[in-house]
Amino acid sequence: MILLTPGPVQTRPETRAAAAQDIAPWDNDFRAVYARIRERVLALAGGDPAIHACLPLQGAGHFIVEATIRSLVPAGEAIIVPYNGAYADRITKLARAAGRVVHTWPVPDTRGITAEDVQAAIDAHPDARHFAMVHHETGTGIINRPEIAGPVLRAAGKRLILDSISCFGALPFTLADYPECDAVVFTSNKCIEGLPGIAFAVARTDALEAGRAGSWSFDLHDVWQHALRAGPGSFRFTPPVQALAAFGVALDLYDEEGGQPARLARYQANMRTIYEGCMKAGLRPYLTQAEQGPIIVTVHQPPGFDLQGFVDALKARGVLISNFYTTETPTIRIGCIGAVSTAECEQAMAALADILVAA
Ligand SMILES: *Cc1c(COP(=O)(O)O)cnc(C)c1O
Image (cartoon, rainbow, N blue to C red; front, side, top):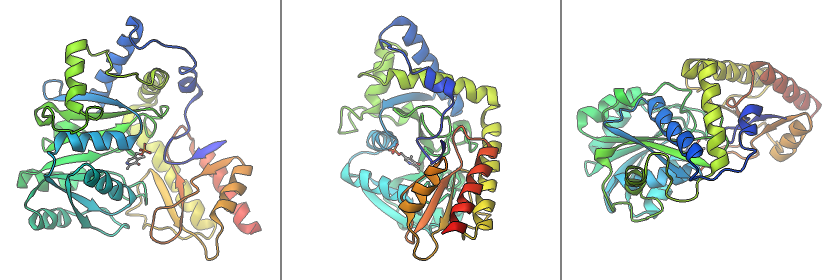
């Protein structure tokens, strides 16, 4: 099966094999593996150990987004969420449920934010200190560029929380270039191509205040303090040990491939193959080529389209894509990320074209 979904993604057999073992998290061999993962993740985010901490949390991506907002933004304080897709909506929901005040700033879901958008949003909401932005919007495929938002926020004395979950490791980002960024968050199972189960924030420790989270389980200050108390290889609660072992291998394979530039190049080639393949098959892209990021391609469903029937037909030909969409108008979403070659994307597009011709 070729998995063309934007998470969990297709993984390499070596990565999955690393999970086929029993592991005791407090075992000294494993503590070293885990401590090394924390160091590597901090370095991958461009963090400085004197300024930042790698804060792992068990579970899905939304857990780390919620934990980060709770731990960095005091209850009752306002944040701005540039609102151009489904994942911005999720930040809005989880922050409001946590008692933070959210000012959404609507931007069309067909383009990334501009410097003018960021300036207008902060001018309109002077009470908000934080700007919580989805880096790559997995609902559509657009990119909200920290290269654009960062300098505007920096000049205004605002703080950035970046949900980089769907693009971390593929799009370039380094904390060293973004002093206004309090945290960047991501998971094991998207562009690093690990198994699902573990999420990370790399955060400025000067932004982590004790007792702020209003949730012990999601308190990143306590995650940080625990590592200082019990050692960098120690976890607060039961960790997904198999996912962590697999993640270590996924990081090795990432480095072997050539790191971020190589991964971005492969995903971009996958994206172009999928984007052009869809157009050749008569499907209309949701985004212009200029706005299209390298993570997921979204195309309009033809009139009267049966999405589940199409997903099933593709699956029968060995290709699995998302069976849901989050855009206002019905779309088809095809992922470009994961341990998938461009040749496999070509194969997938041939299957897609066959099915559409037969329909
Ligand atoms: C995948 C993703 C998440 C997290 O999703 P989970 O299902 O909670 O792991 C959050 N933000 C973005 C932009 C994502 O792509």
